[in-house]
Image 1 (cartoon, rainbow, N blue to C red):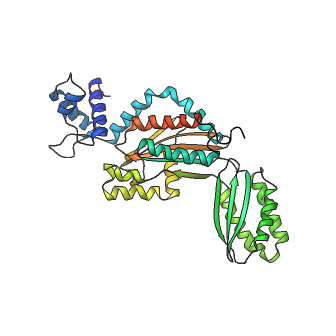
Image 2: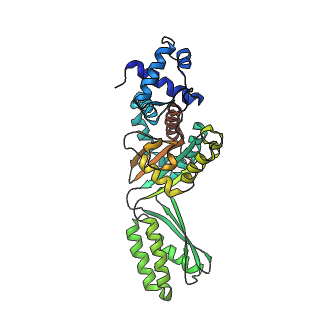
Image 3: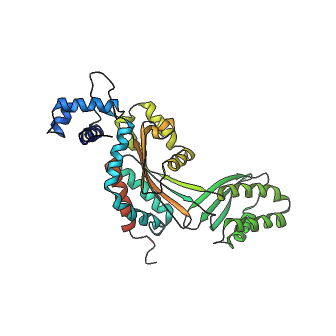
Length: 341
């Protein structure tokens, strides 16, 4: 249990290190933050905090830097001050689909805005929690052995997949198949699948087996929990001192460039209670040991919507949490593009 003075010293160290990126000494704290404390008193408290695992001293002659444990206490303090805002955030997320021309437009806008305001990397995602309902499907002949499947779900989410075919199907045949499937728009995928399978087996003759493979691929795309992800520009990472080390940059980039890895990361950090924060080694992914993730998510009408920011462990958490609040508010305040149609 920290004393009040230890807490003052620790929070000051974290704040100063976030601001400057430099090792923090007792004299700096005495002059800038704790003017009523002597440098000697602060130095003693810093030594005790180091023994308790909150601070570390990379070099004997250097000042201290926060550990993940210190960042966690700092973040929990920030979150405690904003508890009253969480319910408003949830309400906003529940209404995302009404803005920015559907879910995809809203989340593209949100990820870009989070990136611009935080100067880190903004992410946004929507996860289907129940069986998807079809809005429209298209089969597009690419060449003699490939067909592009385009699936639009209710709410505006789009899935696509290139499927190899052992036989060449004409575009007329593919359009006829799409027309038949689209008569079931608004139905759950399970119903659509049965109708499509009956059509394939009953009317496509020698093409049935190859179309069955396409159906299996489409089934994998549609069935179960599926997350659609949107990521803001990665350009900001080049301007962050923490990622000037090429190894750290590559580690984070390897997560961001692989959709599956990033989706897993968001799921691990997810929380059902307002803002969720995962710092450094709290995440078991080695690539994220020098990084942090801040998320807010909400579930409504069979889907979960998630907004977040990914950056260095030395992230300005207070600013990022404020930015997340602002983006959420922007989404609620911005009129939908389709209003008045």
